[in-house]
Every structure is written in structure tokens, then in C-alpha cells.
Image 1 (cartoon, rainbow, N blue to C red):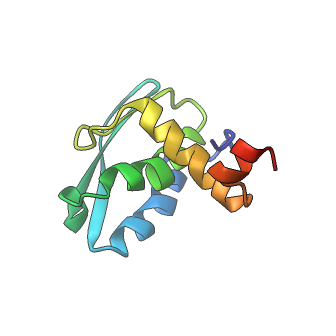
Image 2 (image 1 turned 90 degrees about the horizontal axis):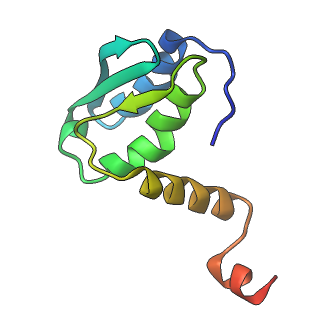
Length: 107
């Protein structure tokens, strides 16, 4: 997971939006309260089966980097936090070249 970088919520949304728009969708910030951000996907992304992956790899890491964001709500995305963490860990492991086989064999 990304460390907090001190970027603003607007900056995070500006980083996220082009990646979502590139797939024919958009992201809207629909509700905020102290420490809580709620987002909604629109367009083709609203019904896409890969929403959990997009959330885990694009939306959640960018919003977590914003100082003061303690909770991210994405009502369209029904995925437990443990699944988000597993997706992020697997991506980090694959980026570093580690595989489940190398972990099992101690390589």
C-alpha cells in the first residue's frame, strides 16, 4: 500500500480519473465527511466485472495517499478489505518477481 504523500483529494481524483476514463467510465466524488470519502463509478465502469480490481489497484491506493482520508466508501464495489489487500500484495509480489512457487520453495 502506498504511504501518505500529502496530496490533496483533488490531486488524487485527477490521478484516478484519466485511468477510469480510458476505459469509457468516470469516477465521481459523491460524499465526503471528515476522514471519509465516497466514490461512484459511472459509464462502462459502473457495471464492469473488474470493478474490484480497479478499486484495489487504482482507486484505493491513490485515495489512501491523501492525508486525512481514513475511510473510503465505494458502494458499487462489494469486495471485503481482505480481498483488496490480497490483490495488492499479489501485484507487489509479481512486480518484484516473486511467485507463489518461489515462496513455497524458499527461493
